[in-house]
Image (cartoon, rainbow over all chains, first blue to last red; front, side):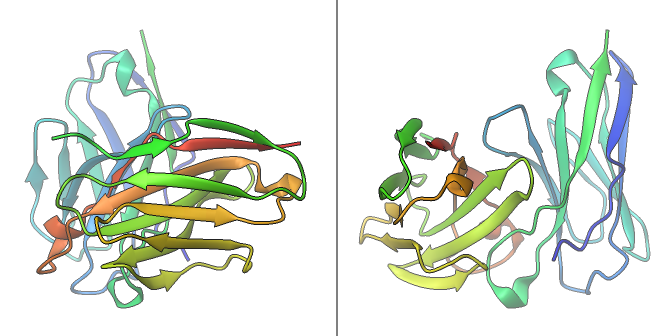
Length: 111
Length: 117
């Protein structure tokens, strides 16, 4: 039931910005977009979430298009430690507080 | 504030046995969710507990069960283990008192890796 589409893999040069896209064309008006990442065999780590405005925290920025059908996670200065699988999630509120994880984007940061 | 803790971290069982996994949420968090992660199926939702009540359940057989205690700690149990139950089992907690996206953010533990032989 994942409602998001992400490219399966991406590469990024160390020190450059990593821009990870996500399509969520069926998102409803009150559904938030969440981003998590998972470094090999660890638990997913929360990065950021947003509704319609762009958001920024110490880890990343989230850009959501005006029609809310897609978003982009930006890691401003990628490091080798950012190599992970990144999941974009739209939480379906009517079905409780579970997150439906898709297959995510495997980001490799190249030295 | 301490994060979500899960015990044990690693476990080896044989087919037909049963197993209990434990999760301690972040202090003050009342919602606990469980997920199973396998290479073939990815991350799949098992169930969610809030105030000792199961609020939601994913599409798993009845061999998978759970419970939550009054201190919000949670356990999940898998009976009659099958080879396909080998997976990373993840627990996540969230605040969830007055709703809103901030309270719904889930924070994951390191997981319990279960191997069924």
